[in-house]
Amino acid sequence: MLGEVLGVERRRRWSEDEKLEILSEVGLGGASVTQVAQCHEITRSQIYGWRRDLKKKGLWSPDRGTVFLPVDFGSCPEPRSAPAPSRSVPVELRLSNGRCLRFDSGIDEEALTRLIRAVDAA
Image (cartoon, rainbow, N blue to C red):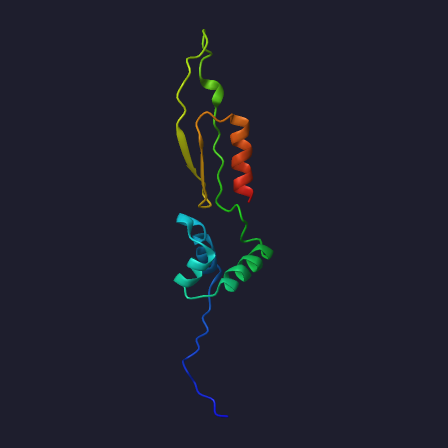
């Protein structure tokens, strides 16, 4: 049986900064691991392996780049009479990890806080 060389195999070296940059692309604009891997001509398993290795070194965490901003719901003056029914509107919140959260503006602030934390931790 004769062997035939079909192409040149290349072995690339990636710095930790390059790996972190590629890992951070997952989820941005809805990009999946598969899409990011195809874009950089690497395999999905490489991305998962890089995540695992960089987590062990303390260089990567799933919530990397997440920033919580304080929201003061108490700054509005108390109404003297019964509040007029307000029309609720849809709200879209984009988290720094690329995830998007859609909810009604009439949502309870505690429920919204729990929802944001749950989505951010997932």
